Length: 166
Figure: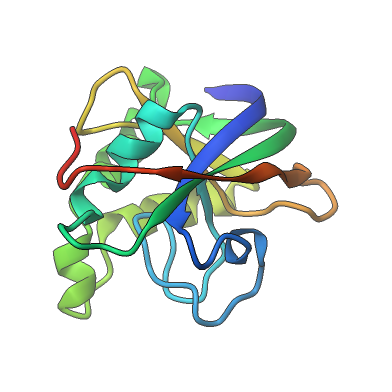
């Protein structure tokens, strides 16, 4: 199943680096659930609560300050992992990935993202595993032909997130 999205989405980032996230082709992009190191992926959430859950396990006491960024996302159609008809790919996507990457292995979530990319989709909707009912998007292409236009809106807003926010 595919789902159309558009509107304002958010991301919580380090306060000293608010502009790096819309860059594409950055060789120093770190690996994450749906991208290898250096591979384009833009992770956004539909609201502040979802964004806090998305980064909660990465927050540590004494971290550098963070800010909330808002982005306008042009209408696009995403592969929806919340759909039962996409359960096979969600099954790959839902597995933990961090320990595998740290050990030098490819997580199954990369296989899931590869399949979504192979099908020609610009991104996906990923349900929160930590807080059922919440969700996030991962765009694999943006600000290019046949992909949504994504622009930062307004100024960064200081935000506080507690460690392991659930």
